[in-house]
Image (tube, rainbow, N blue to C red):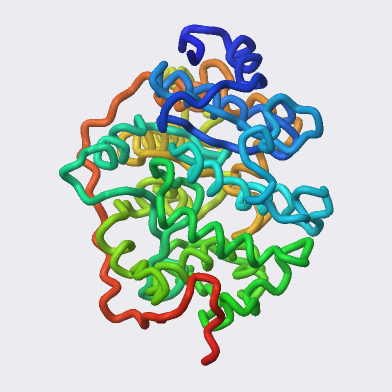
Length: 391
């Protein structure tokens, strides 16, 4: 039984470092390669507040790859689902933690069901309200749920920071089979865009002018980093003649989508993805006005309030990203700094209010499903693990 939401952070943290039986599909899965207690403090507080928001019907599991750890992912996932580089600890490159998370998220969902949440995610809405009620409803066709983002001009794709599915989902298993195959004989993701299973697909090329985000990375490197997304794309454009699995039909009819720019990145373009600006809002004191401040100070206070109210009222989650798409002044990067260890929860600030609201406030808006239109996409009639010869 998950701990009471009223328990102290330290008590919930201790609970999260022990292994818990999987008794239903109502699981939240997260991963931190070096274990929950080594997470940045702001990420730990994210996970603790998931427990407070979701209550006893949902079990939060944070798995790791620490030898001897009670929460090591290999207590949950058999070795056959994991590549040698992961099993033998030989993964290298700048994104070992992120790609380790890509490797483990789908086997956990396939075997046990639930929702994958990246640890850098603040949760503002109950999972039941976001998607789970529709997934469990036999009247709806939905078996999966996720958020879509434009990763090429005029083409949306599901991202992997939020994935919901019950166990034994056919799309989840095939998606992982593709990604697992890509890791055969390698120790990092360099060159994944040229892999035989992906090379027929164009490089990712997000329309950045709309999001006001600047990327300082080549599209080849960007695509390698997000190759897990591209493995999803391969499957959704594929009809397997050996067993009749119809990826385009499943994508169109059986996955419940919402827009990522609404449900997880909502406030980012409003601040031009500026970490310093967002941190400034969070560090603003809610009791900071006394009537004698300047017009500028008053305006900044109102902006901070609007930033927090807007997030709490209009977005299901807030994902704070590191790395690609990258820069050194994302809010997640700033919260990682020792001097900002408590900047996400400082008493009396809008940051503390945002934390409180993520547990105690309930949205009244209706989420609008995003309808995908893949009628014009090219469909490949090939096996799930069969290369496309034409390029």
